[in-house]
Image (cartoon, rainbow, N blue to C red; front, side, top):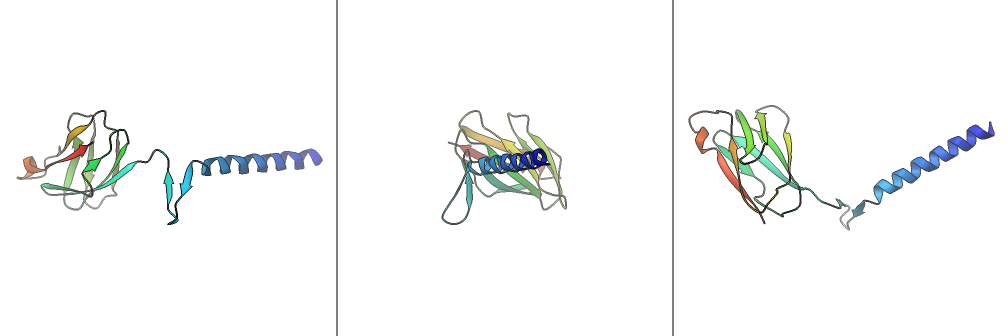
Length: 130
């Protein structure tokens, strides 16, 4: 019985220790937001027929970028030219999350690679990594 209590206490201690270790990797700011070390740059992307709308277009080199892509009109293909990134997004479906870490600074091109109608060839935009 005493052995069982000791095991339970040690297990509880170990669990609390592991849980506190996870919290040490984050810093609480004065506005009660939690900022994680090694931050990910998040950008909201809206696809509609023949256009992309990005919530931001400039990113810091060396930090991963997370594109949260949603279609509000039609079916589109989110692709970054020169990479192997290619994801389909459809109106009415949940957002698609695409993680990308640029290997170099420069201008990158996002292009729709799923035919979406007569203006499909114009469905192109860019973002910059500095």
